[in-house]
Image 1 (cartoon, rainbow, N blue to C red):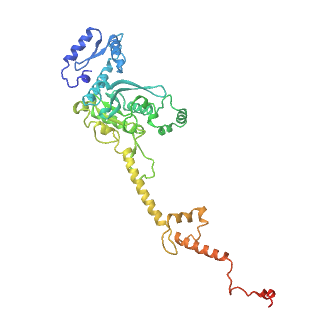
Image 2 (image 1 turned 60 degrees about the vertical axis):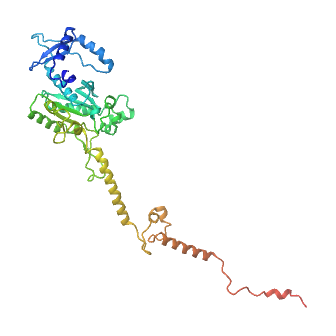
Length: 399
């Protein structure tokens, strides 16, 4: 806590005097003296109750009480072997805070994530630092006390947890996912369980996970990262977009992947957590944390490439259509779209007349046909004028 609350203070006399005063009031106790002679202090049962009373009403979660238990034979404190790991977790939080990544009250340890089968995956550290571009990140601190494949199993469980639905999800959605588990990929993240607990990450994918290695060698770290990349590929790796423009679209789909970054506590201490000390699985080289979490080859690139490919496709299709446009056999003009549609659509083609001529020529044909029909329907005109009135003489008045 000294590193977290006073990261730039090289002397811990003030903290030590405060702890001694709290010890006099039986609120804290010394649990362990480390090899570097630093003392590990923890809350007593009384101090734990006092801390809960003061802090939990303010929304600050208190970790579980470390009960004081001893081996019956040796008298050695039970659970003391975990203190080096706890110190590494706190040191990681301190380095993040020192770099401006997370407020000191923005950290939480041992946060449970319950899976569908009831198993609880606990994150060593959770940081929320939206002002630093990291709304949420889960951290696993490994002192190489776990097998690399155990870390792959943790990654798998975080991936599975990110695909769960909340208890009050729509019945239709629940039934669909139960019958076809892959259907969860069609359910938006805002409808999943993890969005009830954590804010949106501001990036594609599930909640990012960081593996921080401490107190180990570079060779062991490299071997572990290799196992994570190979055996855990299904959980961290993106997929190609399913699109008609496979050659034009090179972007990757990160929506169902867990962004995974790795570093070491030694790098954080030496260079700072805001330096280029983070490596994203699937990439080479180290980047700053926000650069490592970003997806420059993700959705934004996909939208740009798809728009360009769609525009190019439209131009190509328009050119191909223009090349197929009929030409009038009479006047050699190209058909208009209306005339072209008229000769190709079944319900209008039967009245289109000569389909080899354009609209104006067809109009001339129609005009000639109308004139011919009009002429045929008109009564015949007299040829030599009116015939003489042959019966006039019968009633002529005699004179």
